Length: 594
Image (cartoon, rainbow, N blue to C red):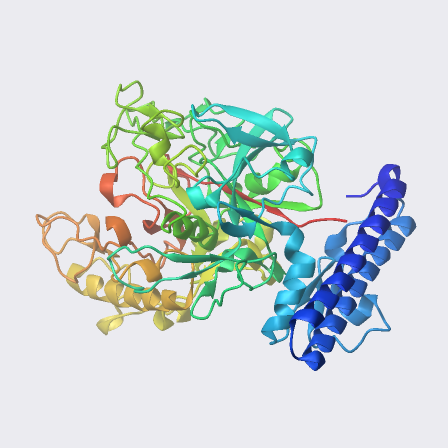
């Protein structure tokens, strides 16, 4: 956000920068001409480079003019559309270029031109550390008053840097060596740690199996679909987490730990649930505190968005967005940790479910990867910054993301669009008639149910039998399996969410066919009460449970009691209501500003 106080020096600085850019571009054009044997192509490329640099300069000048007209403030995120909307004399590039949040974006099909735009517009975002190129952490537009970059030393002790200095320093991250960038925001006493996930494309050689494999990752330059190292991304999928609505992102900041609250020791009817079902508290993201649980799905979204309010951890800033994590954002972290740049995390086993206590804490590991539940005070528990504790992160060291295996089950802002009344548990202004409104769909991952369920029919079997009919358990299981399998098959069209791509079977919620009429997750249409649950699993043995009807919302990661079935590929579908061992985590997006 620009103010009148820095407008004059901002104009001078921008003018100087623009002059330097133009000189560099002209020099580059000459070099290209000398080193390429095709003078016609050289001339075309040089012209295109010059024009892109000139358009970029005029976009900056347009923003400065708007600044002068708008009482000293201007948000660049409103600059979207055709190039000719902002530079009327340039119409020849409207089919190849567009303006998105004040930046030039290439939309044509010429690979060379795409690379040129990525170099000129996105180069400032790209660094090379440890022989690997990727987008450096987006710091420039985070509020400097509340944000600090974090350096971790070899003893897992942190020190902080001002973000203006950190922007020019690459010593605090090295993705080639599984060292991910960390920051914190701290406003009004509400501190939150964040981890940077740079924009990338991925390829899974053998998707839809239960055999885990190393995921192939290629980092991308700026907000483009061009690999930072210049290689082809043919056969790769640009991860959808880096598209937010219509906006392309250079990366996302994800909460380092499960969300906690400004009153983490608050006690409700389920014990120490870290805050309970309220929107009156602020989100914090900290290690070694009770995570925020027993809160309804809609309130999770509300408090996540409140992080950019006056009392929130980030504070009021129109250039950033905070929201509850979605499945694809969860998947972006999961896929990166399943690549050469990360590690499969150990389970967080911290869980005390003694009646009246119910305590789960963030950032812990046990004595082994799949440790069973450990109550508060158990000597087997290891904090986030200890030798075993760091293994609970997605890097195997202190720089990664914690609590993605075990801890609390985490609600994501993701749902099966089946019209269930429980869809209405979403944030009230986001939903109408149990459907997410179009203008808020970017805040949710929305899955299509099978045809029968989408139709919302009341009857699913012979003789007018309904889904919830209690008369015939075996027939009801057949119906439930059919509905769930159809919904699960539709997951194939969703990429990057660590669901269909990383599993090959699904489970459904059924009932015993004999004995007590209990509910269990099943794979077969008939079972006996003595045979135990039959649960499908995905990669790393993580369970894969698919809901329907009244269970449209997703939770991820498993909880402290799931042991080896918990993990970054674990999923379950639930109602969206308040549950004492279900929490959440937020995501921070930086839009950028002049």
